Image 1: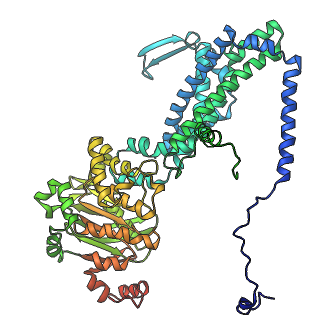
Image 2 (image 1 turned 180 degrees about the vertical axis):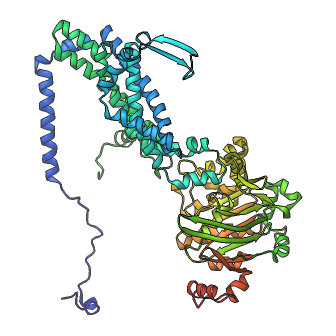
Length: 321
Length: 298
């Protein structure tokens, strides 16, 4: 009833009590606690089974984890990832620029490349490259439609297991990274290019100094997805009997019959590589977020340091938080 | 339709940027070459320029002259072609007909035989270093600090040393009142501060001509003046200014020539007094009666 005639109630309304001395009590969230306890119990159960079930054969895992043959396989995996990752993204960058160019021919060639390599299984591509010698006995470099040859070789000697693996992974990677880079470039405001051209900045520097650093924010999360996928994707080259990590543990467990522990060895290494890459990703993304956020959030290390500085060094009495 | 504007004012405006103001002094020290012949810099002649986007003709034959050191303010309703005209001056927009010269030199083209051939990208970029541009939404490079924004073009487009570009950049930031924010990123600055950095960035190439494309339209009302004050100071520096704006009070104070555009044509142009108080054309009169409140006494 007081809402009907506010001016009248202004005189008669009881005076607001003074709450300034009251303590603020945050709301309780009992269900959050229930959920936390349930999840903690589940995690503990899994951890317990991992430790106590003897069939995991942790001893065997430990024995093979740093064995010379496994480490050699790991090096091959890293080599394949690094080479095809770098070449794939370089080629992908070129394909992305072609796709964004004004030339209809460049656009369609780039489009067709991505179309073909994204629509065929990587497995088929690898086998095709490895068996290229069946389709073309010799590979030569010369002037088309003439007999001039600068270079000629047997395909089978040219395309080793390693070459087929790199070729297959690189071209496949390029098709995907081209789209990622193109997406990143498109995410940069057109006004940036306009401002750069109005300032007389040449085309190459416009791309490398203005557009790409801004595009990196959109490119990096997807690019690291791809690189991490590639680390594990290299395991597919076992079909070429190339002795990378996965093929190596297969060879070992075929001999020792300790299938699961050795798969675990490979898995743990993949986890290690991915974890290291994730740390790199965090700091690289942070580098390229300069200027994109008003203030950079603290890194986990800085947070930990701040935590110890305020909570451990200071008196241990609980503060409000 | 075309109207030769500002020709008759050129004698008065050319002499106008006299020495004595701090702005004129700092501009003179920054551009020693310009001190020799200050009045031959930055003559802009736009001749019968046409431009279409698809089926829409946005410029229908525009002719306009701005003398060296002159301040031309282009006003008119949205879609009248003001911004497009401005963007043809530094060849960001290619003309479909007509031509533009700066100090007698064709912009974006060269004469070969009896044809105008479009210049190579490299030469166009070189011409653009004579023409600074300030955009409605600033277009600062967000990944670079204020100082890096100002120093980028001198380093990359003019090949100056980093130390030299930084030193000059700090001078320019000081001139727009932002020396203490040199290391801030654009997102850490207010809109008015960002636009002042953008003006400093445009000045870094020592342009003969500065183009302003609605420089205050994206700003909160209370930030408009800090930007207009910087432009006002530049108006006395001897650099030719061409400003597209909706700020009529600013146009009246600062312009030598006010150009009223509508529907892709210059309807009329003249001194602020002629255009605001005494428009010859009915179209001009009806436009100003809508945009200027009755209380705003001219």
